[in-house]
Image (cartoon, rainbow, N blue to C red; front, side, top):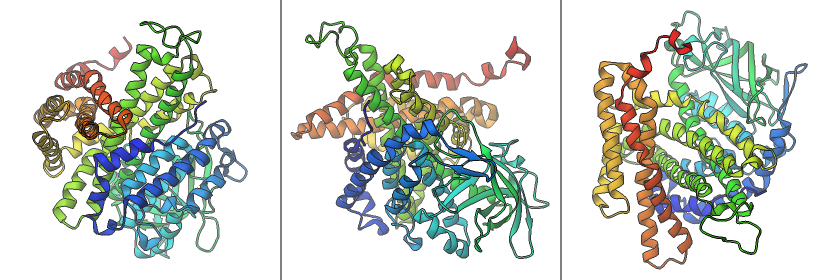
Length: 592
């Protein structure tokens, strides 16, 4: 069975050649000392950690899962997780892109995304413990008081403690206005938090001694809607060392990510402290959620890469039938299944979508660094607009493709894939949740059409169109420029249709949201694949010795344009079909 190997060559191609990230980052005052030598060394060490420490625990962790002790409310993670997490934290990986003010290394956010990809490929369950902590770190960095920051951020950033996001309750998920958890003011300035939260990643575990819960709750007499939500910091262990009355009531019995502790959390008058302003918890929550949504996109990408590696390794070794065009391995009883067109179709679809999604994710991550660090306010705003616009696309598109790639990978293995022997069935199970949590992909599509397209009066989407259109005008001779132009025009048509029909009837926009997000994702990948092909051709023309790598890029772009991009025609038709066929059914007719 093949073991995971970090795809460093392609990661570096996107980071260094496509995005020219080192040059871009060194224009930012806080990143001027970030060099290619430093970045390369970090990626090499991250690859070793992922391949040699995290990946070997992935299969055993899935089989063993987390164990709950109802007598103590304690949760034990799979064997080896605690030592691996300690090595991860002590190596500084939890602090990579965090602010130096509280012990972080201050390195680029986009670099952290590359490390996250490798972590998610190697062991998605284990990677979620430090991954979700970053949501808590970002919320406290943006909205916490100086005292809260001084007390909690150094230990969260170092990995000594972990953090959670406690949002969902049994009766509500997306509609957070329905939450029932209550926060009652106390004389000492704290609040007594009472309620139940479900599906809480890392709510209880044995990796660290303290867990910092960020909890949505309502104050007495708060508006009974999202306008009445506040955010509170509720530590598992209080400053005096006593246990706060917040307990794990049990573990969810899940389809996948079994090494990640997904908990029911009961807050029984637990002491908490307000983060930000009263009844303004929604804005604090989005600071957490936006960070988490980009991370979940990387989970989809990471799992897809692992599944592809397993499928490719199997296809090279598995002997089955002869090639239709004649034997390719005459010295063997049959040819490797890699020779068969349909197997190639599945493998190439995985390869091409993974490499395109990697480019889109890293592009969004680089914009995040520009938005935080550029000297010019206009540059920061333009980059932040792109991050806001692309966040739901990265989350939804990459996780849709992550599951599809894992599923296609399993299909390549046939019956072997359906067994536990090759590990790919675990990846299918693990990847399925990525399309659901941190806001289902349908919610991401609604966020895109309902909020992000109207951001700044349409400023963000116009900037994206101008960026792609400007590149096309300057690179009219680039490979597949005509196909990208057509896809961009289709996306613009769809956007105008949404603006026209959605303004008259919001249900029209909602009905078109999911195909619109996919159209946006495919158009973005077409643009990025054209750029990758152009770079590859230039390298080949210049006599690069890496002919295999760059030739594969050209052929991958050809495959994408010929066999995947034509889907945009159908998507535009689906968008323009409107809501009629969706909304015409009565409730009773669904069962007819």
